[in-house]
Amino acid sequence: MLVTRVERIETVAAAADGRLRPCVFDLEATVEGPVDPASGMVVNLAEMKGVLRREITAGLAGEVLDGRDGRAAAPTPERLARLVWDRLHGEVSGRRLRRIRLIGRPSPTVEHYGESEMDVTRIYEFSASHRLHSPHLADEENERLFGKCNNPAGHGHNYVLEVTVRGEPGADGEVLPAAALDRIVADRVVDRWDHRNLNVDVPEFRDVNPTAEEIARTAWNRLRADVESVRDGVRLRRVKLRETERNHVEYEGEEAQ
Figure 1 (tube, rainbow, N blue to C red):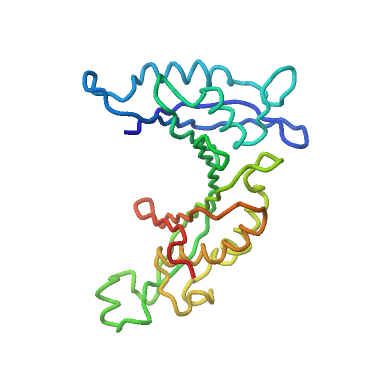
Figure 2 (cartoon, one colour):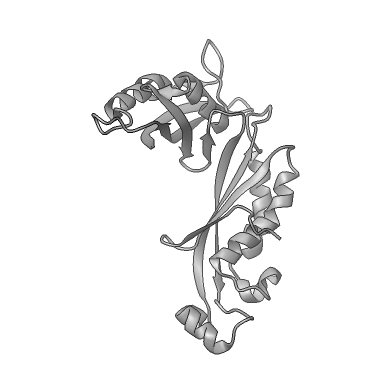
């Protein structure tokens, strides 16, 4: 069974140009193990909280992670995730550490499993309108299936797109340079779809019903080659689309075209 404790890291990182910037992350530390038959717990959460605060949050609070004067060097979220893992020595309160997740305020989110590769997620937003109408179905069937979302006038959403890449951090400490990923997502998806009618203005949806599932899959197909050409070994791991607060879809390339 997995058990997660959340704490807050507030520290300072030194960028490549030497400037200092505040780094605020929610730290999710996840351990795994069997449920103890006597206590009914996998781990004592009070003990786990104490370890995380003593070894991580208190020790890093306000610390400048520039590698000088004996201080740790963690100029990127990826290196910070590895630093946290190393300081915990792969376990918390006698339970094996399964995952460290750093959730940036704002993004990125970094997931580290104690291996050489990590997952890094960055978040993007765009607004677009669409009409749910399949060219493969009769008008009556479209109206029955999609209801008010089949209205010819269409409707809009403020979409949130989460793009996750996986790989080993390079010499710069990043799995993929944030600026490179931001540029690719902007060029291939966000700038192309933002404030557009997907059915009318975007060629890739002319013959495709722009459901959340198809939008996510189309985003994957448009991003994958460019993302994976930036750095050897880095892969597009997942695309997640939040259409509303209650409706999300995730795509990992299982049906990529």
